[in-house]
Length: 262
Image 1 (cartoon, helix red, strand yellow):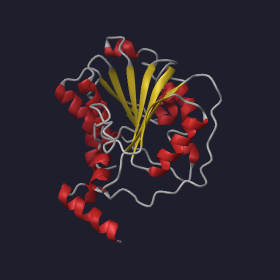
Image 2: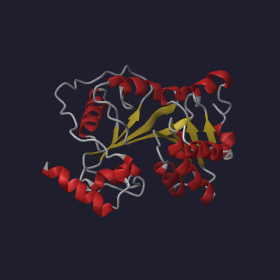
Image 3: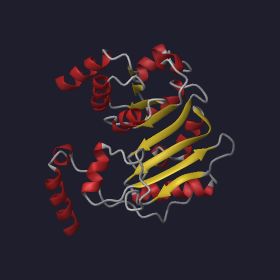
Image 4: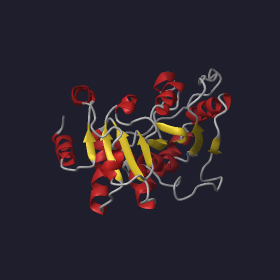
């Protein structure tokens, strides 16, 4: 592990709102705040969870806009969330927390009904592995273990494949839809909440990709079924390497234009 990552992990250990619980530690110690998050935040405000939070742009952005709610970002990659954690600390945001842990273990971090809303922002579409998709029935059943009844799940993605899959899943299971658009910014439906832009979203927008948003409620009852997906067209693009993605916006736009001409 590089010195820079070790430095970030060390800095995050000094922040009392960052909880680093890889599998081995979770198994050995358990998580003390499960069912006790209200005590940590010092209020009974709703808890909103961002899964695969990356640099924590959504977690911090939402916390700025809604001080009456509490926001928790979760990701297995601790070095990424360092950015959001340091930003929250510098701004003195008391309604923010971060968890370094595996998303498949979220019921070890939250008690039943403790979470009001979930954001899944730009996850890997996992086109070959249904069970690994963060909006598959496997994960929705996991979310049911921690969400309030009819809690909201928000999927924000650039992936036509993942969006189409999720749209079919929601329709097949009759899940109540709050918002559904294949072009968030072109539709004029973007608001202060949905218009927060993550690191990867800015990359996709620079490449001319449309951003999709699907928000739906997840009732506790009912067995969820997987939709047919064999005819869904696979995405034909990938994210740029980190060095390329950190180019100036105009350079990124030129690269996008070159890609279109191939």
